[in-house]
Image 1 (cartoon, helix red, strand yellow):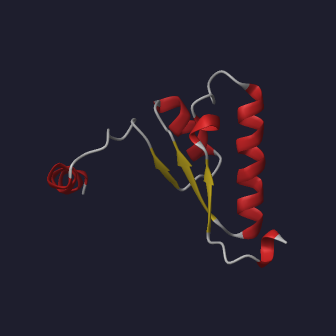
Image 2 (spheres, helix red, strand yellow):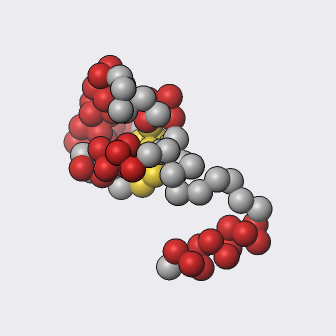
Length: 88
């Protein structure tokens, strides 16, 4: 049973997130996973965020964390540290 597993986060695959703007089925899956995660008290993480509209959609529904090219491309360690310093 899902509620008995040692989970603290649910992560949305980028294949759903990238199609938020164009695919009703992807939005339906995301909405269902958000509802499930919230009912179980889990943190929600979306990967593959590439647009402001995708970020807004997820935030409005309660997704707390995200990753993707909207925020930054993958960076080498030194550049990541500099980027993190600017973001704080």
